[in-house]
Length: 419
Image (cartoon, rainbow, N blue to C red; front, side):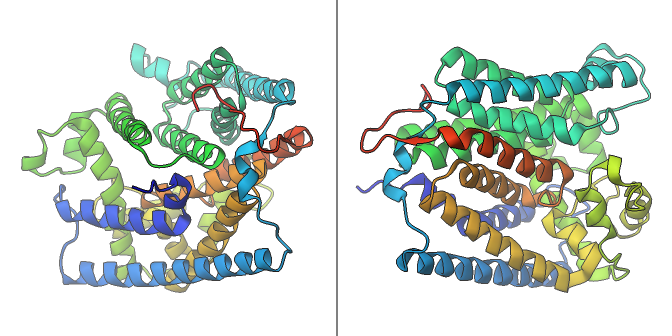
């Protein structure tokens, strides 16, 4: 039996189709009372799938064929045969300096936040201390903290020391836990898996399948655990109006199904009713770090979103609307079409460069992009200040490490002891 390379399975077009398929399947479970299920809802779903998939897959095909043509013409040389051999064999010192710099950056910002905002959110929650700040509004420069923590996890795959790699991973996970950031912790895990796949090129055997399955189970458990800490399972069941027959299920399952399926309900409502488009203000604000909002005359999106959420969303406590939601609020259905087209184009570009060239920057950017695509069932992370900062830092790190990349020819040397 021929084993399938995992790098083939994690293409943007495969994961785009899988993400939509999983979201629609879980939506059909109808675990909450507020989910729209009438004919208008299914008509909206059909239109959204047709427009989004049509634009994304068409652009993906254009990007794929264009890059393959460049490869056949010799303009973009395919290095697939040497991807396994590209390692940082002479750059372990630089890798460690880069990791140390990220840890120091996170530590300095965290100490500054503690002095300005008080104890970290996890400490406040666990001790029951009174604080005017929650995990939602605590701290400054959080987009730098979370982007640095996600990159730290990726750098651990370049570290050949088991102890140092474990410390880097532990530091990154600890950062997300003390700030009670469930979303970016999950994204960091997804990026880690993708980065490993693109670097090591494993085939789908039983061991790899079990490893990925274990990661999915752990993510589900983390969803339930952090959700219980932040909100509480009983409050979640009440606020999200979970149907009686589902209330006895494990909290991790409820949180996972809810997080994947509930955003589609809001997207359906927007598609059917919302027409007061905001012309780009919402996504511009989301993509620019808060410290620059004043420069561009922007304000917090709360004042803009609150009336929309209260008026149009089936459950105002469920506030996200898939990766298409804020694009639709800004530009309507044509915005959704154009946005999906560019996602397909950039997705195929990152993916093909990561496969053909195997450069560190291509693999990092591809891992970041595909993680946003997977989590697109939840919200638009492509135009999120944290992710855009991570792209920027990934490019800087790649420039810092690239002069020390070497090709050891036909000899395969493992980068990570667990690979």
